[in-house]
Amino acid sequence: MRNEFFPSVSESNAFGLQVFRTKISSIDTLFIEENFFAVNIDVIISRIDTQVQTSLFTLLKLIPHSYLADTLVYYSCNIEHCEKNLLSDNIRIVKAGVEHRKTIEYLITTIFIGYKNHYHSNPLFSSVDLAKGYLEWNLPFLNDPDKMCLILFDNDIPCAFLTAKIYADEGFADIILNGVLKEYEGQGKYSFLLRELKCIMSESNISKLIVSTQLTNQRVQKVWSKENFVLDKSYYTFHHFISENSIQKLNKAS
Image (cartoon, rainbow, N blue to C red):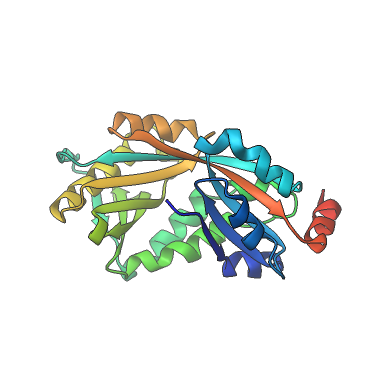
């Protein structure tokens, strides 16, 4: 896999800095020197394959203001067979459309209040409102043919959801965001959603699902293991401060 490097418009607007993203599968000094030190770059958020751990010293020597923000783990599941849900009369799962906008707004803004990710490891980014960002990110899943949103209702009360992006040409789907209202956790509702998605994808000749989370989010990983997902890949998330302007802002925020 090639190393990737691209600007992040949304994060640049959110933080008032020129933010770039990179995904690194190998520590290539030339790639780093040609991309990381270009004019007008303030911060780079990198996902670095943990397999290159023994080579990280080279990167950190080149960019001393680098901070480990989290570790992201990817799980995958091959859809070899579809286990149909046996739902009680009070449970139903619907494929959401634009008419469910208010429902998704309620679920995301409720479930992700106070949720933290790699931004919150960094005092400069710690004030970001993830619920708001997740909402803007996932609303298009209600009306895009290459995206999907499922909502689970218990006695007509929406209590769990998931969104997924479908890569039909490549035969897989990526679960983007999912969650369960706190008062409904531990009741198997998330597993119902995973099984429903598997069946829908199987009927569409999608043979694989992938999903990711922070390494510290162990509870959901236990559910994935029970639903035949296996650990596939893992990535360090680093924040690299390139410009003097960004370093000064970081020091003031610390």
